[in-house]
Amino acid sequence: MTSSSDMARLREIMPPHAGAGDESGASGDLSPLGLASLPSDYLEFMRIYGGGAVDDALVVAVPKSSSGVGVPPIDVFEMTSDARLTWDREMSADISLENSSKLLSWGLTSSSDILCWDVSLDDPDSWPVVVFNRGRASWGRYDCGMVKFLVGIFCREFDDIPIGEVSLWGNAGPRFLNWREEIRMFESGISPWTGRPIPSF
Image (tube, rainbow, N blue to C red; front, side):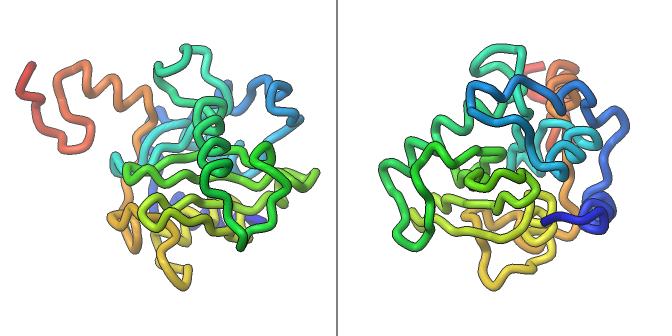
């Protein structure tokens, strides 16, 4: 669903910073989720960017964190639990989904929108993006991979904004910070998102 040109566009729109990416983060035991692999564009995103945040407004999870629950970086295991509970509470009649176990979450916005894949198909590269827009309390399906979805958000390529976090819609210069860099800046007394000293330091 996502081509190399989509990744090239994303890198142009949102250049990865020095030290971003996590080769080891692109792996992990997925057997508890009944999966053998993840989409190739997501694995490429992990290699180039790693887990982290876009403009402090959207978090991309790593496949599996060794840090423990609630400790950075957040992983798909933590996010998926919330996504499945949300579907069970507010399932959509407009989206064909066997049950909530077919959802795997890869991202979350500051507006509490949940970004998922529908993993019903055997080929991970065929998984569409499924989004719970918290503000609308509704689900939407987008027949593209996660990289093309992000490009579509930044370049306003959908008929309507899929997420409630409006700051990312049409954002021509989004900034990505790997979770390690965000922590490093914070621990040095600098706000990762403003570049200004943190008052408590």
